[in-house]
Every structure is written in structure tokens, then in C-alpha cells.
Length: 364
Image 1 (cartoon, rainbow, N blue to C red):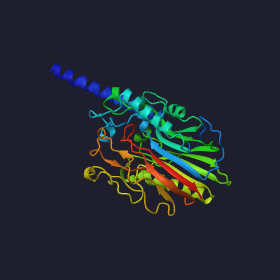
Image 2: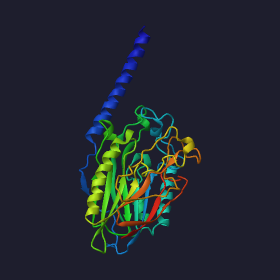
Image 3: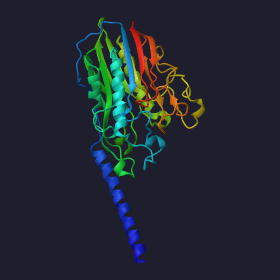
């Protein structure tokens, strides 16, 4: 009987310690929660020589680089329903893999250093999951002569999941949107997008934003370049709808001023009328992706390559023909911008769970 009592006593102590750990984690997360103002001025980290756009033909690249941790070898425990435990899935990629992914991204940037604007998402600056490598600085080094700015959208002192594996948690995360251009923006602002998960979930999720860069054009108008990353893990698209409504108002206001608006990013939704299972009809049973509504912005144009997928599912390491792939990374341009060419760049998802998209436009 005494033995049984001791067993129950120790079980009670362990449960109490675990509950204390959870409570302390939530309190710490709440007290350190990143809560930016709706509009924040961003100072450039590097400047370019050119201050006015004089050419009507411009090139753009958008790419979610997956914080250097989601190359072809990676899976992600959270995509497997892991919250309390990792279920044996990867929480953090091995350091050699992260270094390989960052090296691959740097090589890609060097090969495309003739591009006018490069919009990257999920750029880690100081995160446990990517071994605290400052990827923004790495990319600056690969893009000599470019202006550079960073807009944070993920600033959590410690993400305590998987909850039952405190030795294996995601931990400190500081990440955001990196924008690099051959022209110096006259103003850069971070716009906080509306919508949030309920407490306490929201304190451990991204604070979605759009990084807005304004460039003087030779005709006296402005070229407004937006780097955006909309919500994922959004059941029913509730948060996405709030964010898209907000962005729509902003885009229209800029266009009505006579400005040229170019938006690129990871929308976490497919373009209007693009079938989400275009590339993976055979293995789409347990996956879905909403579309942006056809009437979102009549007269505006969507820039994407329908032949090349831009995103893969992370339930397992990438296997061609087996992994679900879709298209959620693309551009949107205002009616006074002509899309000349859009190409998806097929990398077999070597360096990220996303693939780059390159676009050439003319300002009319």
C-alpha cells in the first residue's frame, strides 16, 4: 500500500511540475508578446545608389526561403498534427542541412543579381530553429549594391511546443520579410495585418504583416512594392479574409493616387480559379487550399506560372510524385502595370518548401 501511495505521490508531483511549466511558459509568452503598432517605419539596413526608377521595364523575384530549415530532406512535426509531441517528426533540421539551404539560397541570389527587386519571406535573423544564423546579413552579402530592409513578423522569446518535449521545443524565433532592390526606397513601412488567433495561441504565432516600399518614378508617380506573407494554419480562411480585405483597401488607395502597385509574396492561398490540386490530383485527398476570390480586384492582374508548383506539403521529406505540391506564391499588379513574363523556378524543393517565381513587368 505504501508503495502505491508513493507512486501516486510522484505522479502527482510530476503532473504538478508539468502544469507549472505550462503556466510559466504562457505567462512568459504573454509578458513578452510582440505587439507592434499598425504602422511602423522601417529603417534600411543597406542603401543603393539609384534613388529614382528611370526604366519602365522591371524584374521581380518572390521566394519564401523557409528560414533555411525546410529543404527537401525536411519534414515538420506541426504539419503532422504534432502539438503535444513531435510524433517522431523533425522539429529542427540538423545544422548541416540548414547551412546547405542557406548556401543554396545565397547561390541563387548571386545568379539572379540582375533582378531589380527580390522579395523574400521567412528570413531568420536570430532563431534557435536555424542555429541563430543571421540570414538577412548573409543575403545582403550575396547582393552587393542592393538596398536592403527587414520587417519582422515573428518575434517570440520561446515557442514551447512540442509541449511535452521541453528539451526539443522550437524556442526563440526572430524572423521576417527581407526586401532587396537596386533602388533606394524613399520610405519603408511595416503594416500590421488584422486578425489573430485566440489567446494563448496568438502569442506563439506570426504577427502577419506587409512591408511597403515606395520608390520615385521618372514620371513623378511612385512605384509601390509590397512584400507580403498571409496566414497559414487558418481553418476556413477566416484570418486570410480579414487580411485580404485590409490589403484590398490599401492597394486601391495607392492605385487611385496614380501609383504603380506590385505585390509579391506567399499568399498561403491559390490564385483565383487555379485548381489547388493541379500538380497532385492523385494524392490530394487529405489536403485542400482555398482560392483568392475571382472578384477580389477586377482589372488587376495575377502573375504566376501555372506550369511550376511553388509549395510542397511537409508531412514527410520531399519525394517527387508522392509529396503534395501546389501554387501559393505569386504576384499581383495594378491595371497600369503590364506583365510581360512570369516564370516559376523549379529547384526540386532542394532549399525550401517553396520555390521562387520571377516576373518581368512594364510600367504603363
